[in-house]
Each structure stands twice: as structure tokens, then as C-alpha cells.
Amino acid sequence: MMAESIFVEKLTRLCSQPKINKVALADCCKEIREKFKFDCVFLAHSNVPEEVPSILAFDGNEEVVETCLYRLGVEERLTLANIPLKTYPDMTGKPVFNKSGSLRILKPSSGIFLVLNRPKKDYILLGCAHLISQSYDQKLLEELGAVWRAWREILEKAVRQFVWTGTMETPTPVSSSTPKLDMPTNSPGKQEPKLFENLSEKRKPEKKDGRRPMVLVDEVTRLFNRNYFEECLAIEVERAKRYSRTMSLLFLSVSSVGPDSAKPDDQVIATQIAEILWKSLRRVDVICRLDPNRYGIILPDTANNTYGIIAKRVFRFFKEVMGDAPPVFINVSASSFPKHASDHHTLYENAVKLLLQAQEVGPNKAVLPE
Image (cartoon, rainbow, N blue to C red; front, side, top):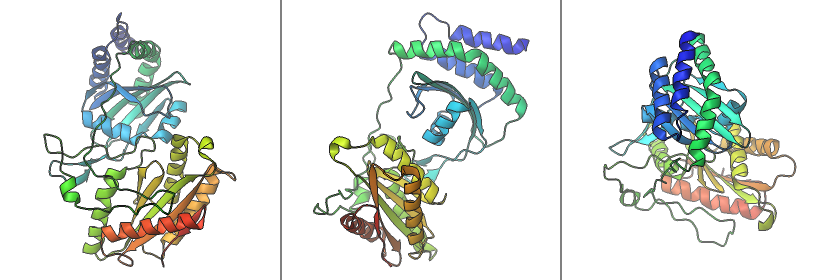
């Protein structure tokens, strides 16, 4: 207990400077990392758990920080708001492009996350993680929890001072040279979408080190985004060709029920749609948010006689999550390889055309080829 008290005093001194800065917070992370033998420790902050936290400071392996924030979606952050300490012994790795341009998944990491949640004021996250997946013994959890309980009050004051004085750095948006797929609008008279034209030319990286952008996840839903979808669809079709397997592509669109003046909150709806899709699909299925109102789902090893069951499950969970009077309606379409298409261009094109037909049929309708 004496050693623990001395350690907390050291953290408190670092957080009690007249004008707290990023260096002092990083020093706190370093002290915790070295004492408890983590590969990375970071501090992040947001006003509410629904917002993606901004990194205030960290010490150790930056790659692990990215994996941690990728793992902690809205649902996990809300859970942590009520459970101030939680462990993840096997976190899902983050998808990235390596130097040669190939898609890879980082090895799973493990971590302990501690939260101080002041509703509508502060959501402070302390992440302590390892590069290699592992479990944590009760003694470590008790020691780290005791330090957190004794230190978090002074940390909150330091973080609020840090944020209020405007010293918190706003992350610079990462621009991507990846071409965007022109998804269909709700109006069936609109021009049909462009397909994967000359992707090898359009995908030339702009970064000096030759690497592609690492932004592959939608920040609101933590689903994969359009960049990942474009790459993964081509890969899954090629995989199905090579091993003589089937795969399918499901599209889902979201439209408001009422007039524009009564349009629901896009972020709330997006979070609910993500929940619906997570409940409806398998872990191996790749769920992507292509734009605010369009979702693409890649279904490995799924034949055309299966996605009808999947669509019914989506509509069932839609009613369960949204209730009897939802503010939006959805439409669903699908296409499969090799039944309806011989390549990813045609697969995508078929699903888009059928989505337009589903929207013409009416709210909460699906058009699925036999």
C-alpha cells in the first residue's frame, strides 16, 4: 500500500503543474507503462461515450493505440461508462495496407481499459495494452484499479484544464486518393453508378513512403468503410474463384420516412443500423458503411439460396431495434458469385440495379435474384 501511495503521488505531481501540457500527460502514461510492464499506455478524452475519443497522450507502441481505439466501438465505450475497468484478452486486429499495398490484419492485442465518466461533461479513457494477446491476473487488475481510483480525480482536473485552454490538438483528417463508388440515390431516375474503373491507376498513393491510407473504418459505427469494401470485394471474389467457392454481396439502403424537416439524427440511425447488421450476420461477414445511407455486406461462402434467410433476419432485427414506428425504412438487394456474376465488377453492378428496383417497390422491401 505504501508503494502504491507513493506511485499515485508521483502521478498527481505530474498532473498538478500550473499549466498542464501534453508532455506531462505522456509522462504519466510512461510511469504506468513502466511500472506495470505494458507495451503501450494512452489517455483519451471525449464529452460523451458516443463520441470517438481524441488521444491526449500516449507512451509506447503507437500501433497498439490504433488497434485499441478500433476495438472500442460505441457499444464497448457505453459499457465501459458503467463498468470502470474491463479487460480484452484478445482484441481484433486492425486492417491496414502494408508497404507493398497488400491488405493485412494486425495480430490481436490485449488490453485493460479504465474509464472515468461524468455524464455530459467528461469521458476519460485510460488504455493499457500489450502487443501480444494475453490474459491478466487478478493481482494486476486490483493494483491498477486502486491506482486509477486514487488518481482519476486529479487527472480529471488536469484533462479539463488541458481541453479548456485549447491545447488539445485536433487530429488532421487523412485524405485518401481512393476513388469513391457512386452509390444509388433514392430517386430511381438518377444515373446508374460508376463501377470499379481503372482502380489500379486511380489508387496510386499520394504519401511519400508509398503506403496506402490506414483509414479503413467508419468513425461513427466502427464498421469498415468504402476504402476497405472496394479492396475486400475484389479479394473475396478472387478467393472464391481460386478455391471454387461461392460468395455473395448484400446491399442495404436507409431512407427517411418523413419529410426532410423531420429527418432523424444520422449518427443515431447509423449506430442502430450497425447494431442490426451485427446481430443479423456472422463474424466472418464483412460489413461496410459506404456512405451515410448505404451499406455493403460481403458474404464469404454464401450461395444464392442462403441470402434470402439473411435478408429476413435483417428485417426481423430492424423491427426489434427500431420498434413499430421507425423513423426510417430500409431496402435490401443481393447478388452472388458465380451464379449471377463472373467478376466483382458485375457482382457489384447487379446488386446496385436490384437495390434501385427494391426502392421502387416500396419501404422495407428486398429484391433478391434466384
